[in-house]
Image 1 (tube, rainbow, N blue to C red):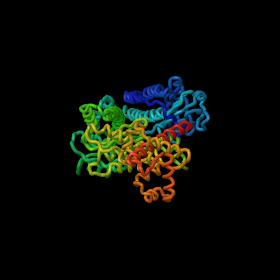
Image 2 (image 1 turned 60 degrees about the horizontal axis):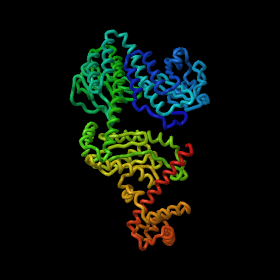
Image 3 (image 1 turned 90 degrees about the vertical axis):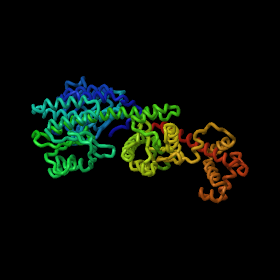
Image 4 (image 1 turned 30 degrees about the horizontal axis):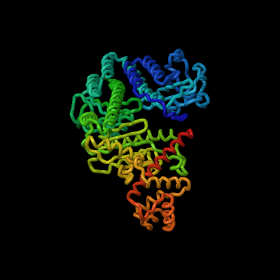
Length: 616
């Protein structure tokens, strides 16, 4: 994304109703003009923009194909070269762009009098790609002051562009198919069936059966990617119960990305699918929505139509859009199920039977050994960053979303039974312990590091103790949240922290601020003395107590001379009104932990106020 930093406080399209309507518009029929007009209307309404424009590229020219009602009379008349204006810049660089305000001051913006651009202050422009990554066109939105586009607007338009790409290719393929009267009726019926399918369980077998019939094929099979990037058989005609997962790299890169496969390679894959000595012509078509790979449609045909590859490609395009639509619906349903499940699971008074019913719907075994993971955004503030430049909040949030997405994907591949709940400012998960007994915390740390996380940020990740049985998870959620927050504060760095890593601090988390005694009162005076004098005394006392009063060991731990340590201890006794020879060291050590934790939390809160108050 290029342009001004996007605000993060704007409301998102939570109910996804507009995205559903875009999908419905695309699935309503092959008339591209009608689809584009409907999409323009939906995008204009959803983003509250002044105008939405859809341009198509041809021979290095961008031509307006669809526009909001007020500019509809300009469709087909406004055109300009690729590279000209913000829309042309997006087409040339193949990158999305957003200008939050003062659009005409941006050097990429080209003034077009017909579009009255002098009244616009905020722009969003997103490329539309075919599945081959060829540029189809650009969607551009204009907004009048004081309206400014935010991240949800950009993400919504990018999703819409991906679906528009499928619509464009579907329409192109449909136009070609209309010349083949014998296939037209059957393709139309298939498209209607695909659009009307309520679930993948009904859609995929229908695709396999209809494709086999249309192409007079001996066999048709539908493979979809799983979380481990393997191609898994989901439907076949005629039916068969077992098929080994396909090597995605071999199938996709050698047979799909390289173009139409050679006869030898196609035959080798056909034998891998249907056995040696297979007869017929194997055909393969990718299932792609926008630029997202969904799977592969495989066909073994004997004397099918001469344009079978084109027909198969048409079916695959229609199927891909429908598969993506149903996957999106399933994802939204699962997200709501997970949200409700997690909220119930963290309540100590939750009904056990209801919990188990919810868990069954998500294929979660509450009696299995699991941990709760809780991750929140974390960045170095001015104090903890030292000489390093602290990152701005918007940059940190962007990093968090990127790293969290990559980490979730990696953990899903490593732990297929994992359940994730992504929120606006956090991500939680139930992670089942690996059957081989491998270190789960270590696995999460590796996933975090491989995904781009460091000690500087952008995530503080807490891992609970092992949970087993419905009643244990409420404590698990509290433990994971405490480990994420307190672990990062104590360490002064991001990363992965288990609840056990908190050590003695675990025992003061729940009573912090509730118990007041002379020890805490004295230690609070010590903290105030530190603040005024810049002398580290509370940490000195903590180390002294941890080493049971051994001067030599404590001095080595703190890298100071024993006499310096003795002088500090005398000052501690004077300021905190303590007599270390007579005090209850166990109670004093617990008080030190409580006061230190309270002090760190106050400092972190003050740092956040300073950061947000600075306008960064």
